[in-house]
Image (cartoon, rainbow, N blue to C red; front, top):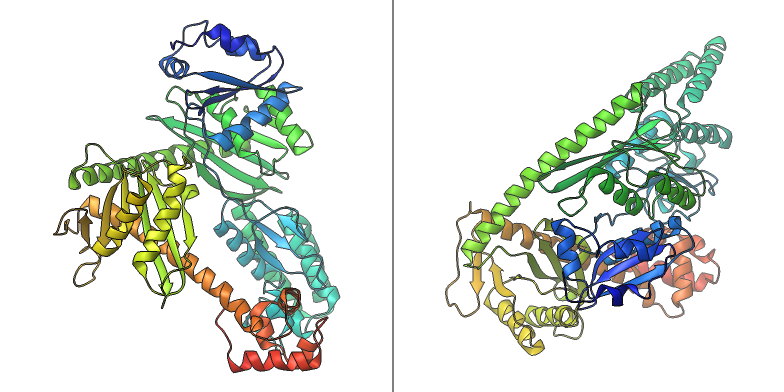
Length: 607
């Protein structure tokens, strides 16, 4: 136990429900917990025998902060938000920073469009999902194009057609852009799409069968054959995607634990359709059992996501009644957590368990290989221990234009994408990579010095001795020591596997064998930094070119520029538009429209 007097820590803590935060001597948060009675719960850490993990935590406690809530349910919600924000080392932690994709139907349009969507749920149109991955969305959109010819093209493309596109030729669209389908027929296809995405495919089949019979009675055999093929395709999709006996929305969640690692598999069922599954690997203290793991997972996973009315779990989570109450409060309706299920649901739950076990074994195998690479890197660079945090910087530009620097981060488990950063480089001589590297490291490590990020064990620089020297100078100016600096340059013939490693103070480079696991890890980190840098550079360059032509035309300010791009479907739509179309935009006269048209056809920029 530490030397802090528990009575001093406990004296001002009330018996109300709320959340407590255990702090170390530096003010860092060790643990976040909730309690029905705060004082009693916190006192229990000092008055009973504890396992080794809790003993270690208690030995580091220097202070305790509490937040009082009205109910235990409110405390549970606040606890999950604080854990996601603070990432305390003694809590179960879920890394899940991605928003989930949806299919959006633009119901506000005369001819609605089906499209991939990721972002706020407060948007125009109607959303279907969420889907576990972008692939699942794209696959569903592909199937929908075979079933119902609802357009999926961009608005700018749709508004500027004078003849139907290839999608019409291959019978994936009815050509609403050029008036080849009536609004009534198109509305019927949209209605069928909505029913399909809402899990009401049986209704669609019944309607198509009735339409096929009417077409046959009217001797419209070609139309009847098209409807027959639609019905057959829909039946095939039902066999592949639909869960027998299910008609509502639910998530099936199963956990697996082995060798100190955890996996949670989530199957998304919406409208009776299996939208796919996704695996998660929460970090948790070694003695965390499955009920505790699932309880922590649910509160963090559903903190900012849609909660279905029913959750089927592999084990009953800790405080299940409280969880149901808190999740129901967040969802605005009742949420049921079920563990004991039968028949088809039991088979689906067993499949979720099998997937969790398989994903965990694959991860353990991958982690073992990654750990071996880290150990090989330790030996290759003569380090005292395997590096726990690695950073790599790269510079990207085209002829010095719109220079962007990237910083990617790897830790003991692999890429740590929330810590990635890009830097737009300004105020240097065009094409001066040394100055760009110096500026990027100065900006990054000023924040490191302020305590925003930890100091890495290894710092890779994409480049040779010159870039390495610029990086070392930046760290010296900031007074930062600690990270081992390594420059990674291409070999004489610039082939992969012939890279040279430059270390400060050494005249000759270190050259590792091409099949070295350490070299493979360095190449992976360097390639990730390159990918991240060039993506940022291309985005910055495209953004600059999007507005550069308009900015050069006198009389077009930010508001007119925005109105032009919005009403004509972006830069491509504007480049294709005629003088009359441009003049039709509010605030743009014919003379100005002529200038815009001439500017774009004199020099059409890339997009």
